[in-house]
Amino acid sequence: MNEVEKQQLIQNWERIFTVDAIDRTIQITANVPEDDTGYVDLYAVYSFLRKYGAIESTQYFVREKEQYLLIEFKNIKTADRLVMRRQITFNHQKFKVEPLKKAQLLIHGLLSRNDQIEDFEKPNSMPNNETQKNILNILNDDCLRMIFEKVVNIGDFHSIQKVCGRFEEIAKQIFPLKIKRCDVNIWDLKSFSKIENFLCEFGSSVQSLQFREPNDMPAVTDIFLKIIHKYCNNLIKFNLTISDISIGTINKINSLLSKLKNLDLRLVCGAEYIPLDEFISACSQLETLTVKSCHQVFITELPKITLSKLVECQIRSRPIIFDEFLACNPQIEKVTLEYSENFSTLFGTNMQNVKYLSLITDGSITTEEFQEIGELQPQQLDLELRLDDSINNIFGLSNINVLKLHVSATFMDSHLITLAQTLPNLKSLTIVHEHRVEITFDVIKKMLRYSVQLQYFDVIWPKNGIQSFEKNDYNEIVEFVKRRPNRIKLNIRLFHATTLFDTKNGFKGKLMVFDTHSEWVHVLKFFEYDVHYNYYHILA
Image (cartoon, rainbow, N blue to C red):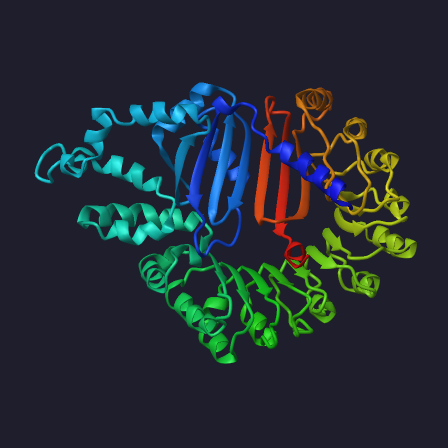
């Protein structure tokens, strides 16, 4: 790509993030936390703010440790009403709200200086604890229960409970029930002391827990597992990401592991020795087991043991050999695996009870291998494939329910329509463009005429590829879906992404949602524009 083409590409992407309706747009700003590990979930922002009014688009920017959210509403009054709030709390973080229209800054600044607002904010205007003006004296226990029900940050539970005896009594009624319903992430509690305080107070109510080993601190894993074992005696679902664990710790937490029904074990890169035989053997009551890892772990095999209650197993790790483990558990009904050469032998002799099979491949599958998959005939077949010229082999697998295709330049528009015609049970379809092949919306509309069972359709365009989708496209798809005999709702997600090199780092994301007829069709359109610093520019 020469410099002219690069600048044209940058202009094309920058144009996507241009805000036309300035007066209907607000800016929300916050500092990026030091421990921030990801970007804002734009759909979560959209879902949170739409309660104030209909949203046209949502944008996200990161520059120099500051987050910027631009929310374009369909009605200017909605934007003005939010600007008057001056601050909102989202995802446990406070954001400053400002109008994007610069001329409005002075107006809203003057409005915020009226006496009523100033009096409300003065510390000396707070009511005395002895008077009836104290809101805590006015609210009865039912009101406090309703307030406590709306507390979402589990890190606040312990401190709220310790405010006073009345708070403690009501908190003990409300918070344990909330904890039982949620998936607790231990690092939402931020500090070691808060973690132990929380688990000491509410650990017996925790039924689902996530723990991820801190980076460069594998030594704390054993410590935290022992703390979890001490307090969480009713844990049944455990999501655990680790690089190391000692046999001594496994023996000490045996009673915790023996009660688990669902284990999601993720082995981080560099994991050299985890005694899987002892660890998984201790989880004797498992009904669901997931094992995932990167390609750089040194563990080679799942243990040759029988877990009599195990009905679902996911193994997403090429370095780990799983044949003998699966052979010892022929009762399993649902399996997710990476395709291997001895797949047909394993399933032909030992896995006759499998009803739901999900296969992932990182390479092409031969015609003979497709035939082997077709002979299995599970009730539901999910495939993730990387296609070259083998697309015709898929047309014979009529029992496919979920299909994810990484397509190359040989994938043609007609293939998409043929997929819809020959796979009558297809409920979810994802197309990932590997090269400069671009499916147009005209073809997508033709495909939807035949996909009567389709509920989820995702398209990930190739790098730098931008496809237009407008309201008239949405309305046309709504009419197709309305004519389907089964009245099944269709969810469409469209992803456009690029990574460019420039003189500044930065990230931009834009979300557009089409849901005028949400009972029929919901369309999410997302643009991701990632700019990396061009070090070669300095050297030049």
